[in-house]
Picture (cartoon, rainbow, N blue to C red):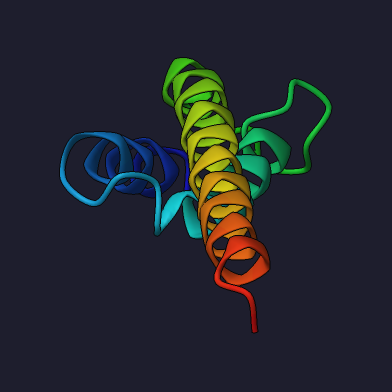
Length: 83
């Protein structure tokens, strides 16, 4: 889970401008849970889980910024169109 969250988060930043970032966030959180020191079967990959969490948070923030920008632009266009 940790490695999957890292890879999907990296792909979301590099290729897709944040679209799969929320999915990466879920995988990274699950990876953090699986690699926790107190987990039943503690696994390796804690670094990948942390890196995936940070990258997916950045991608999610970037996605939110794009959505807010589009809402503002289309809202302004609708408001000033006179309709």
